[in-house]
Amino acid sequence: MNNYRNQQTDIFNRLSGIAGIGQTAQGSAQTLGTQTAANIGQLGIGGASALGAGQINAANAMSGGLQGVGNAGFLYSMLRPQSSANPLSIGAPQDASSMIG
Image 1 (cartoon, rainbow, N blue to C red):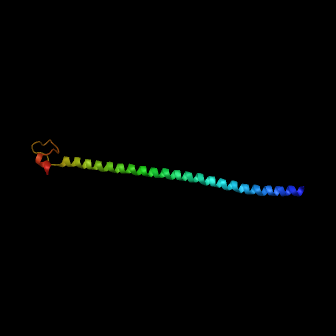
Image 2 (image 1 turned 90 degrees about the horizontal axis):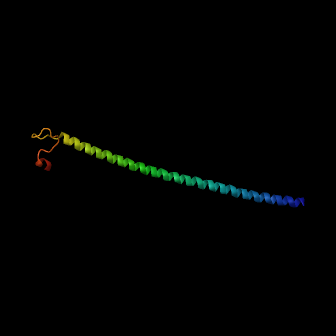
Image 3 (image 1 turned 60 degrees about the vertical axis):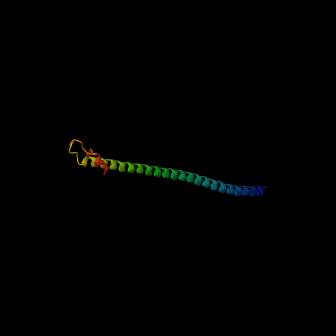
């Protein structure tokens, strides 16, 4: 009887060890899946942030360019020769012919 009990305990211990290996492998796979999902999420967030920052920078560049064009037009109108008929009309066209060419 004692010999039979030792054999049964040996069989149980072997099967328990095999089950433990499966549990460890499943735990590792679960951890890997969780980390992969987190990394994919972070990459998506990083890509969206970069895209948004690029669009904001493009809008700022366009705004700065248009502001520069507006400032240049204002300065040009201020520096044009004044009409001799009305010296207070800063940047006003002298006559209709000056607007043509």
